[in-house]
Length: 575
Image 1 (cartoon, helix red, strand yellow):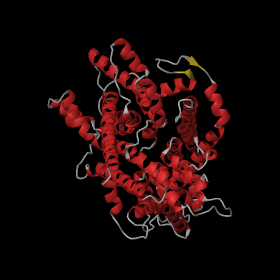
Image 2 (tube, one colour; image 1 turned 90 degrees about the vertical axis):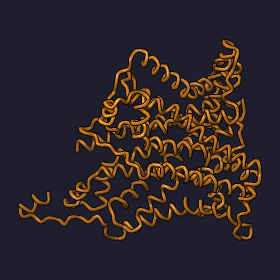
Image 3 (cartoon, rainbow, N blue to C red; image 1 turned 135 degrees about the vertical axis):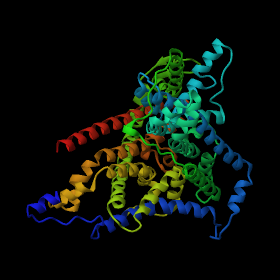
Image 4 (cartoon, one colour; image 1 turned 60 degrees about the horizontal axis):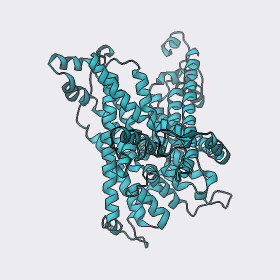
């Protein structure tokens, strides 16, 4: 366009520099840096610092020696590691065949199968734990049928085994999503070459396809490990306290904020989360997984023989029945008047929903308020960081990405403990209300914990917007803020909304930080309300009803966000 204007003798504006001029970018950089320091880096560093000092402030390793010298803590440490590793294994057993079958072979309803496989993520794992106890517990539906038909039961929901079962079912979609994406990017020519050399069946999968999809698998497996290792709600609901997260919670809530062992446990949780993410990247270092897709060819879908199709559909049906059992169980529980020692509820009622709307209506409003505010903060900061990194040459701008991404490895429980210690003597501006007694910290914890998800979406969206579009708008006289508001944001709308939805959905089911930061019931969101209801048998009906409403809220939010994205794309295309 500049060449055409010059040919006509017009004045051609200078090509705008990617290094923004003026103080604006510096102000944005400083504000984001202060936010991340105040609500992420400093609270976490305070937790780490407290674990290494005495009451007088002297450096010590005695707290760690005390931790490793007590049997209950060593047992909790070993249990947490074993549960996380076992959950990764069983989640892989579910996800790997499901991903391979739907990507590699022709399946009717393959998209539906993959969609149903992701549904466990929209339900809090501790809610699924209660539902699974009614279905797979000692007196659950499955064991009642097995005992009646075959004379034996399967104690799958007992102790640590039950925690592993629940966590595997809930978090396997992380592996499924990453593995499906990785398998779709494999060059079909690689498979054809292996077939020509005689590789077939499991050998083809083991030697060619799975190794090429290894980056996706390791990314998903690392997320599963971190999520399980840090989970607090599921062990508490199932009565399992000999794990690290429950021990940290019990130490801080029973002994107090000055108990050093609670901080030692927090440091260990941080270290293992960081190590898991680091190892997933380290295992891929120095290895080349790239393939050349000629003409965009991918793995060729192949037809299954009759008996192969029967086995495949049988396996998929079994997996989906198990992974969707929590949703079915929580739905039945929400309508069940009596459900005890029976395969299905003995009678049904709507009283649980009436109880929720009467006694816990504010929890729904609190959830929407906290999640909307936190998701908005995430996309605003995520968009700003993405713009500073990709469109400016500010020094140290990449550190904003590093600082924001640290939140991935910080358990919600640890961040909440850092907030309680950092703000315990601070009051809200112009009031006498302590900060730790307000709902502001709950919302900020949601925002900080979900910022990496929104940031990745915003970065990907901005990378797809060519800088020439900005230059064209500037050459027509638009100011930089006008370019951002009228050009960049509309073109990034899809990615921004994806980040917003991810932040909203995951915040709506957050419990680890919530359970520490809620100071009174009037502040409680739905996740905390569900947890309170589930503590007693009498409250499980209303708790299930609130869980169903949480799933509905998340589902509606996802649906309307997709509608908004499609409308935004149509508007941009029409312009």
